[in-house]
Image: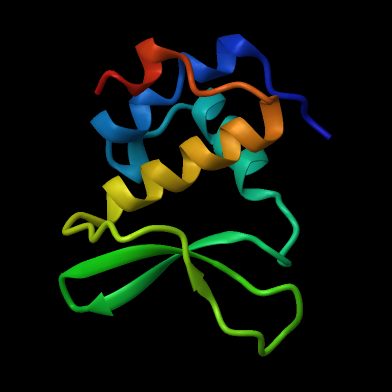
Length: 104
């Protein structure tokens, strides 16, 4: 399985700047790795209504309720997904996303 490197973190701001169809192959590789996490305890985005989303964590077993991660409400689903990517980056690399990547 692909191992993330600190250099990969420099690719992530492209996620905020471009549309999904325009992502580079390198960014797609990093995103695929960040999305390959076990279902149990996975961070997800929950639609509260048509224009607001919250971050949550799946339960350990199918049918367990989701648990909200915090009280933030996002009006842009891409920003919510960005927060999930930052959480997963930290989980998989053991360090926060480099400041240069989070400056967007």
